[in-house]
Amino acid sequence: MDVKTSTSKVPSLYDKCMMRTLANFKEGFWRGNRANPFVLVPSDIVDDLVRIRDDLCPGLRPSIAQMHLLFSSGRLTIFDLIGLFGDCIFPLSTEVVRLMTPDVCRNLRDITIPFLYTEVIPKLLECPNLEVLRTQNVFRLRLLKNCPNLCIIRIHDKHAVKLLKCPWNFEDLPFFGKSLEIFDVFRMITPNDELYKVLAQIFLNSPKLISLGLIDTSLALHSIHELYGTNDPPQFVLKRAFWGTADDADPGDIPPYHAQYPTIIKQAVFSCPLLQELIIQVFHMDCVPHLSHLKHLSVLSINFAYCDEDSNSAFLNLLRDIGYHLRHLSVETGFALPVNTVLKLCPCLETLVVCGSVTVSRPVQTLNSLQCLKRLKVNSIDKPGLIFVFSHCFGLEDVFTHYALDFDDDSLEKILKKNRLPNLKSLHITSPNLTYRGLQKLLDTLPSLKNVYVPCHKSLVFTSRGPIRTNLYTKKPDYFSFLMDKHRF
Image: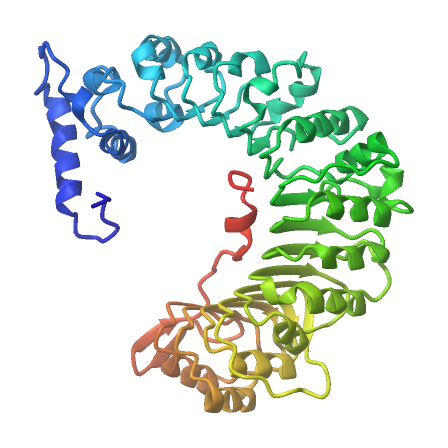
């Protein structure tokens, strides 16, 4: 039976045992022991002890010295130096190096090294079982030559801009490249020809690569196609990709993003047939049809803001080909998107984010109840669009819209006759035409509602469940943050 810590408010027996063990460390219970009792403790329990210790307030937390037997047992597999030492970075750097003996290093699978812990980096040579490395320090690849199982490398810091100035030696890449799955170190670097050469080398030397983080890989794949010429270029197993420029970059600075963009995307699609998650900026509408070959996509974030022409026709044609498999969809467009057509083409959609306006297409076809959609976030939605969504989507949990100016008491009556919104937990809606009585009825009807923000009304609404505050500021939700987070993508 797997032993896990409880997520409930009442501590489990396992939680209590962990806390008692940490208290014993602080009280010096094992001080003076000749034998190390923790060499026989399973690694997952040792990892849990360290993780729980990191979450404690400083007054309850045993020191590193007090837990020396645990760390020196060689049973630790996850070593998070940020959590371990909190904010006390400068005086503890040498203590970390002393702590990382061969016994400590030999079993490590996952290590996080914060900035300024540069003395720890050479210790990577003593970690033969390392699989995951997160750091804010720039280093040479040769320091990883003893890590044949390394599959994830992430460097998240502005200091990563130094990477291209570092003497990268790709002769060292084969030492760990065969197992590499995620290599996220380039996101802070301004795109240039040198960067695309580096990315191309990583593609060609890493057969298991699934992600290079939030950095454009389309031009690197384009350079590989040019390298192979008329010969068939290789295909890769990449699962997550970003194709486009940085948010603050001017596409005009990179000429291929205009005239050659459809060709670049066509080549990228050919090279990555197994892609599951894609963020793409559309600089030319002719690139959109090529995306229809990505039959495994479940997450799509597509931005048409750089296109002046109507994007709806090409976008809806794309959804006809790939919509069935989509679970999470984000669209930025300057044209009103017909939500009924989108939901018909994407019956399994759980998250829909529209940076733009939402409406319905005519005639409105009758659809079966849509149970899958849970999260909806739109800039603005008209009355027909709002009635359609609320009437058909029985699984809705979170709704956020800046403007729903036509939503009124009559709309509410029509919605509640079809759908009592039993699962709705969060509602943020700007609608000055909904009266106090209508809002009161809305709040009385929704059994699961926990967070509500309806401006243009009194701060308190009295309902059968008691007074409910409706104008508290709520943080704008980012439903894609859990998917596009820099620590995961």
